[in-house]
Length: 494
Ligand code: AHR
Image (cartoon, rainbow, N blue to C red; front, side, top):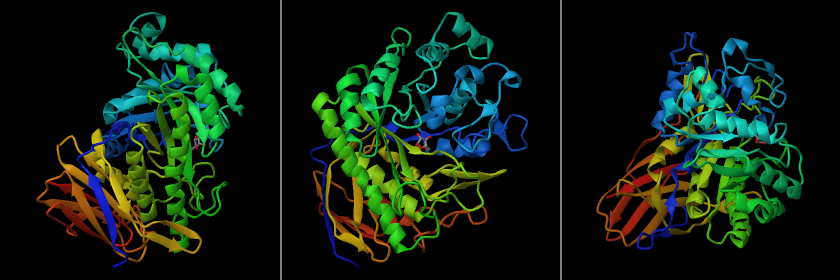
């Protein structure tokens, strides 16, 4: 095995809560993200409940998805909510101009979205239309969703839902610097102030307002938003995607990569740490009490679309590399959990770094899905600070930490440790000092595979799946773990 890694878990100085909303998932009207992936319709031969496929909803329930972000993305800033309520047969169809130029039937609208959240057991993050919608349209949508009485509440009841819904988060537009209107930051901040004024939940209820935040390292965006609009917001977003092979436009293949492509992507994943640190430092200037949260509400890998798939559908396979990307990010969020209290992976089904793929009546779980499942105990757990002195892993031009990790005290009272080894070839033995923990027993699970690009298909759906892990020992306040090459491990201490 390679150079030993040393670490300390400071269980005696617990940190902030790892907010369960960090496990939010993003579902956009994009490709087969909604239609086919989640919604098949009540008359479909695919088993469904009120139109949503039972297999996918079941798998999402197993993950305890806390929040679903909908309807976009770029789609949100062209979405007119009125087109998606009322009898489905009367709803207008339109062109999804942003994603593939396909027909958007408006079959899944507000009522269907909340039905999905009900079935999954998740809360709602609704993204409003600032791009080509008006403050009035936004205000009326919020009233339609949340008002207990009045004409819009009556219309909601006539359309089948008497009780108001709860909107936990509302996005004041999306990517206002780009598809949301190509605004400059000062203007976007003023627009955000204006629209936010009309986000009015009913008395005694609260909607958390999330402003459209920066693209990657646009620190001036964060500065202006905080300075001009910060006092009217609850959260500010950040979007960052892993684009190996030189950035935008996405060109790296999702499966056909070598060790250099592996290291490139994981190196890019680690950039999240620097981005959060720098955006947070700006937020600290204006909000030292950390009243606002940084919502990394789009993150994940973005490769070239899979061959033969529809242009504009962003369908990409998901390999062991994506499992590492997910684990590294979830660990980074632990380090910044005082400021990062919500994030959303892009996306839920069939799009980008997807949790789940579907094809007709078939469903397959991705390596990313398995990491989210393994990290479930992190939801609303207490972060235990961890210092890791890791060797570096170097491939050509790419140098990155070999070992990533995080530790929490779960709501179950147990200590959970996540560790991953980015090294594609070498195992890594990690010796962890447990400060303030008495543990006599350790058990674990591992996600690994024979190849760095191993992935699950409809034909072979279980190539990458979690297995029991026996490579950890705990004795006298020291935990020793041998992480196989290219692996994600979670441990439970008792
Ligand atoms: O997730 C895909 C797209 O990426 C979203 O619609 C947009 O917000 C971002 O550019």
